[in-house]
Length: 305
Image 1 (cartoon, helix red, strand yellow):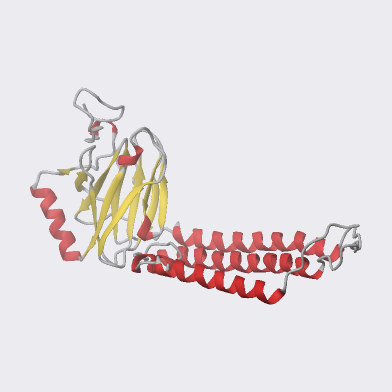
Image 2 (cartoon, one colour; image 1 turned 30 degrees about the horizontal axis):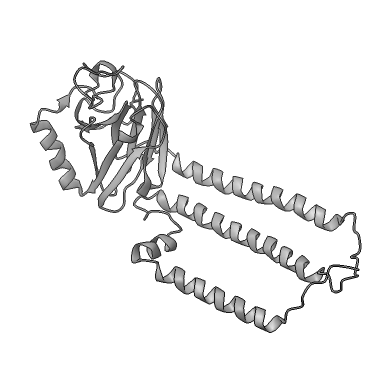
């Protein structure tokens, strides 16, 4: 004799489930602030503040759609099997099935097709994010060093044929700003200009990224990585290093201010008046001005004593 299971009426169970679901929904909605609602609308992505950002967001959004469709199919099959093949009596023995060829073909081919589609769209977006215009509107030389950033802005006419390697820079004169262990540097950029960042490091691998731009790139010693971004919305944004680069990696923060062209030109003038100018960009090593911020007796490799 099989196990005796008490029989429950379907209507009360369904009513209880509906009430529980309604209560849970109301509880979740009641706890959502305006900021939470905005985050849900953006699918946990920041607002796009660059011309390249929407491409990343669209990839993220449709990945969520694909995941939800896949989830619905899987959940639907689970509930279908639970209902369709449930035991209807205590003595019932279900039909034993060794395999189902159509189902096995489906769950073998479907994931492969999904990976192909995801890969193709990812490569397409990656090509957009890493595309380099031969004639960007301006070039900023960025140095990421343990554990802060130095931003070098060119003065005068830009040479778009410059490679960015030592001795072959896009400008004949630079102004710069640099952070240290006690001060977070600010990167000021003009709005609606395609900006090329030449990224270099004198010590270890870092990663230059601004979440609101929805793009980032590694900063690797011994080479110059290039990234182009077009800021489209004026405002102040957070930037940071995305690569674990040492003990004080958490200090590698910076701010980005996207301003009008007039304010940008005025900012460069302020740096020049403050004496923060040089014939060549500060690229680390003997030219690094950052310190750990822990005390003058403590120094770091690649930084000026």
